[in-house]
Image 1: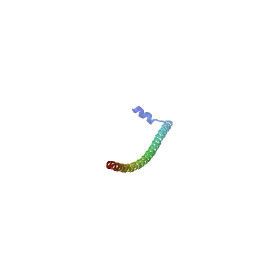
Image 2: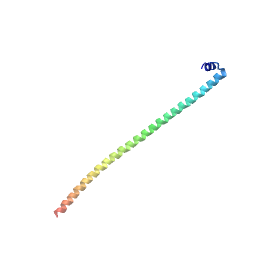
Image 3: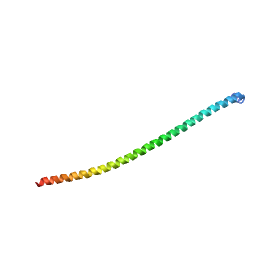
Image 4: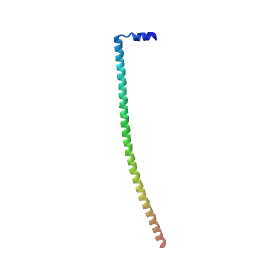
Length: 97
């Protein structure tokens, strides 16, 4: 360990320069990864916004479909009541003859 410390302290200028170049490369790689992560974050946010928009559109369509279904069901119930009443009238008229 002491020998390593001695070797480290006895670095010449080219050795230090080489070390700084390596440090610069490492920092560049880290920055690219950071930019890559930022890019992924932006893409993820866009995907979330896109899916949120699609979800809202689907919810609105579901709401409209549910409303139409309720309206059609109400009309069908009214028609069923009319049909039932008509059958009773026909039945009573047939029974009178």
